[in-house]
Length: 160
Image (tube, rainbow, N blue to C red; front, side, top):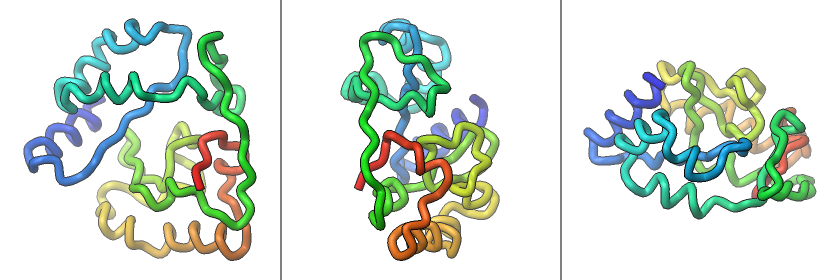
């Protein structure tokens, strides 16, 4: 929480130069229980009132993270889409920063920030990671060789 709070505070102080998005993983808790949790309220104070609005707009069709999460009855499992030679657009939308300082190309399946989608650490510089060879190689290998990163092979959050 401390790393996330620091990131949000710095972003606000600099007049929001980067877009930061949040996703709520499915739990057995109701929406009101999740959004009234102290951690959610702390993030909301630094993020702004749009956080609850964004959470409400989230689709009820979700990923079960390869069975790691049991879905409550009010949520529906997303279908898996074919991935042949079309990289997920998340690889072009922005970087994902983990609480441990790891920076990834996507966080849909990589819970711990230790997969082949990890590009480096925040100390490496976000701009250099975004423009770096590792991310371009991920995109290129998917597009030209159909070499899909390991976490992406079972992802239900694939966007083309």
